Image 1 (cartoon, rainbow, N blue to C red):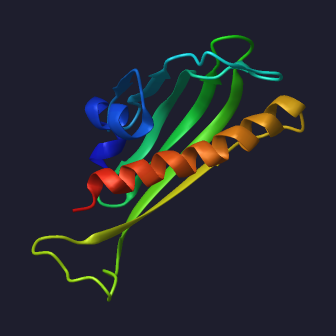
Image 2 (image 1 turned 180 degrees about the vertical axis):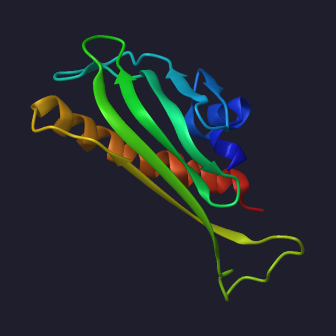
Length: 144
């Protein structure tokens, strides 16, 4: 859970330029990325700011952010969306010895919100794989 709220962690796994997050009800959830050098034909430059409001949080189970908007460096915001992150204990892989004091965690992320516009379709087309890459980096940072 800390990896989603700590600015240094967000920089490491999500390549955030800066962030302001508060793990509390009605806390801000704002993450900024450097604008890309390239431009997507529908969305313009990527990067920009993702902002929302933490509505629910349970340190042992996850958090829910509502009223989420992506503000690209160029063009109109995309939103509103919601971000639901759950963390649950997972069995340690049998093939690996369990390190002392370690446990496995299953992280599940659902980003929702949509309309039928080409911009929304392109957003999910680009950002779905972006989440996969970021979570792979998070896993590498957290594993022994």
